[in-house]
Length: 503
Image (cartoon, rainbow, N blue to C red):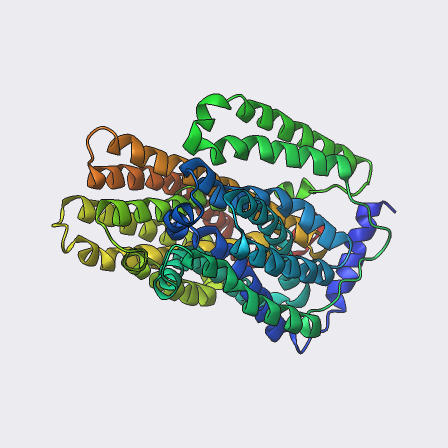
């Protein structure tokens, strides 16, 4: 019997002998709180950048690394961390990474210079990257059937809401901790929450007991790391001309990732253990489409928060708190949408994502028009209802897409699968965070037209979302044709014996 066949057989035995852990729901909330902190730190710092720059006497290029460095280190760690969790013990890696995240949060808050702050942020992002894939893998491990869908619904809501609520949370902290040093509390606030999560995680999280001898693909780690670095580094350097100077890294990164793909296929042919099994994309229903939908959506979704912050704070003179309050309707809508979507995803499937993307496009498009043409003194408040609509749609995109992408992944691949999914989202976020503010400043440079700059940047964000909608619609139509031909719903097909053999 081949190693992969033995793994599939062991996986089936584990599924058949599954006994629900009575502490699983409490354990889930521990992982969600930790995941919320790590993802919140991507967007919460955006509103504090002016304070950081003043407090540490830093240049704009230096202070940009406070955001970009975290995102870069986060993305570099994800797949490798997921595979290590699959091969070793997810609980141990999660707790070690969470402890490191807390420690490096202290280092960020206490940093006496911009150089040390950037170094601490790189380390904090690395710890967050090791922690993030364990979240989705632990859900795969602790839940089955309909419960797994509900758990992934909560996880998806956490991803969406943490990104949307970051500007408001940052504004509140800066309002309470005034002064040039108030930004430090954006990092210190992680400490008590993180310590509590570590203590509860030690009690509640289940251990992983991988069967058989486990191997970590070190050449694959190197190739994937170099490929992701080559694609992301020019993007995080975009503010200082990185796209023009480092354009050659994009084709180099694509070539390295092609080599990584071929190496992973070769390992599968040898019945070895790849870092990222290519069969995730070919044999696990919905994974490839879901990863594509998430990557394209995050190109538009992640970049809009920095653009809104620039428009409200620099263009309209809002404080960080007032700027955060202006985009709060999106966060509220996202929370409501995720709550509704979690109950409907099993019944509606990909159609829910299609509807959600349509609502996001309508909401952000309407917001762009209102902020462009409505009187400035009332425009932010007139735009609130359509921004809420966009947020509601977002809640129906992120949470269901994560659920549909990961629910059929075998538990033995859960960490690597979750890491790869989030790597795609981080790459999309890096593209959006570099491109949208770049467009904003490009329009602004031709005439100080903040409203035109905002409308242009939001229009570009909608292009990524339209591409995501096209992919989701194609998958939905394919599901509908399959249902008409076989008289079954997509969930029945996913659970069929044939599909189980493919997995």
